[in-house]
Amino acid sequence: MKDNDLKIDLVYTWVNGNDPEWRKKHDKFTGVADRGADVDCKGRYADNDELKYSLRSVEKYAPWIRKIFIVTDNQIPEWLNTDDPKIKIVDHKEILPPEALPCFNAQVFEHYLHKIPDLSEHFIYSNDDMFLNREVTPDTFFAPDGMPIIRFLRSPLRGLTIWIKGNMLKKPLSHYNSGMRHASQLVAKKYGRHYHEKSHHNIDAYLKSDFCRTADTFKNDIAPTVVNHIGGDNDIQRMLYSYVPLAEERAHKVYVDKKTSFMLRIHRPSNYKKIIQYNPVFFCMNDSQYADDNDRLRAREYLENRFPEKSRFEKS
Image (cartoon, rainbow, N blue to C red):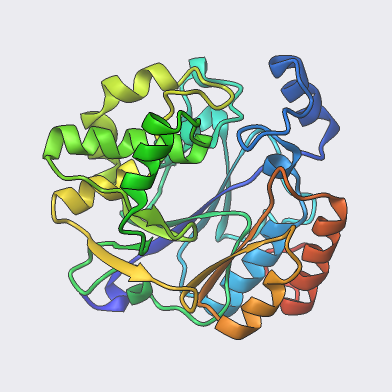
C-alpha cells in the first residue's frame, strides 16, 4: 500500500484540570481534590498548553494528517481555532455510555475511541503531552501491507519482574502496570500468547476495525470497568488493542530505543540534555505526582523554545 493511499487521522485526549468548573465537578464526584497518586493527581490533569505545542509539532512534521480529533470533557482550549476544517472536538458524551460519565479515567474512555464519528480506518493516537521531534511519514506508523507498527521498549524480564513484585514481594502495581497486566492476561487466555513488553508510551497506530473487533470480543471483560470514574483495580489498559492484532498476526512489532522514542520526566531537569543527546523521533513530556509547578514552568519554556511558531490550529 502506497503512502498516498492511506487516510490517517490523529486522535488526542485532552483535559484542562486548571478549569474551575471541571475541578468542581472532579472534586464533587471524587470527594478528594488531589489523591497524590499516579491514578489521580494534579500532574494527571494539569494543562500546561502541551496540546498547543504538540499540534505545532504535528503541523511541522506530519502535515499529511487528514483530520485531528480532540476528545474532551465539555472543554475547548481557549486558543484553539475550531474553524479549521482539520479540527474536530469530540465530547465524552458523544462516545461514552451514560454510566461512564463523568469519566476521569483514561483507561475507560480509551476503550471508546473507535466510536468517534467519521474516524478513518487508519488512525494514530496521542496524549496531549506527546510530540514529534523529526519529520514522519505514514510508513512511520503503518507497514506497506497497511497494518499498524506497534512499538515496544525491549524489556525481556518485565513479566517476571511484575510477577515477583506482586506475588513474592506483595507490592501493589501502579495503575498503569496493573491495567497492562490485565490486558496481557486476557490475550493470553484467548490466544495463548503472552505479551509483557512495555509500550514506548508515545504516539501509537491502530486500525479502527481492530479496535471494534477487540472491543466486541472482550466486551464482557470491559463492561465492569466502565463505571470506574476514577482508576479501578480491574481496569484494562489500551495495550489490549495492540496485543490482539499482534496475536492475530495483523500488526508488526518493533523494539525501539531512546533514539526513536524518549520519555522526558519533567521533574528531572537532567532529562532535557538527553533530548539533544538522543534526538528522538518521538518524545513525551511526562507530568506526574512527582512534579511541581516549577517543573511545569520549565517544561513550558522548553516547549516554547522548541516550537516557537504558531500553527494554523491556533487563533490569530
